[in-house]
Image (cartoon, rainbow, N blue to C red; front, top):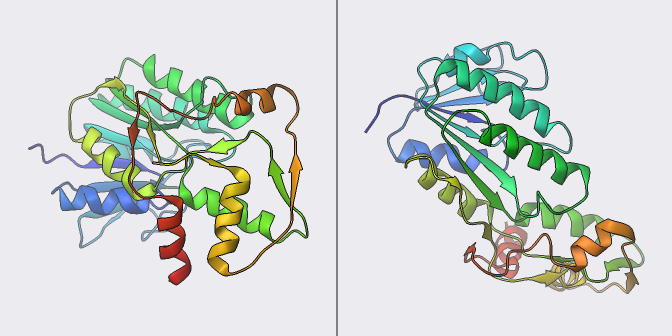
Amino acid sequence: MTNTPVLVTGGTGTLGRHVVPLLRAAGRDVRVLSRHGGAAADGASEAADGVTYVRCDLLGDGTGLADALEGVDTVLHLAGGPKGDDAATRTLVAAARRAGVRHLVYISVIGADRIPLGYFRAKHVAEEAVADSGVPYTILRAAQFHDLALTVVEKMAKLPLVPAPGGVRWQPVDAREVAARLVELALNEPAGLVPDLAGPEVYAMGELTRGYLRALGRTRPHLPVRVPGKVGRAYRSGANLTLAGAEQGHRTWEDFLAERLAS
C-alpha cells in the first residue's frame, strides 16, 4: 500500500466529514483542502490524527494548491456549491496534471448531462474537465443526499400551504454510503465513469415532505404545482433518477429521518 497522502477537497463538508475518517481507517494520511482551513485556519499544520488541513480557495487564485498536491498520488474532489463547480474543477485539474497526480476521483450528480439547470450544467462541465485532463480519473454520479432533502422539506414545511411539485421525484441517498463508495473507488485503480449511486426508494417531493411532517407529528395542507418549461419536462421524465443499471444504497428516507430527528 502506498504511503502517499490523499488530498480531499471539501473535506470539512457534508460528504468530506465522512470520507476523511474512512481514509484514516484505511491507513491513509489525508490532506484536507478547504476555503477556511478547518483545524488549521492559518495555513497548513499536521494534526495528531494524520490529517493536515490546508487553506485554499479553488475559486480564488489557488494559493496553496501546488503545495497541497506535492507528493500526492490520489485526489478526491468533493468541494462543491451552488455556483462555480466548473471553474473550481478546472483550477484543480490543471494543478493535478502539473503535479503528476495518478488518480482523480470526482463526485458528480445524477442527471448532470440531462437537467437544464445551472448547477447540473456546471457539474457536467466539471466532469468533462476531469475526463479531458489527461489525469487518470473516476467519476461517480450520486443522487441528492438525505441532508439536502431535509433542508428543502424543512423550508417547505414552514409554509401555510406546502408546495407539491407534480411529477418531480427524488431518489435520495445517504451521504455515508456515498462516502464509503468514494473511498472504495479512490483506493482502487481509475475506472472512468462508474455506475450511479442512488437511494433505495423513489419519492415524489410531496411524499418527502409528508414523511418529514409525519415524523414530527404534524400536518400541513399541500398545494399541487406544476414545474414549467424544460426543467419541468426533464424532472417529469425522470432525468434526475437512475432506475436501472445503478448501485443502490440501503438507508431510506425514513431511516434517515428517524435518526436525525431523534438526535
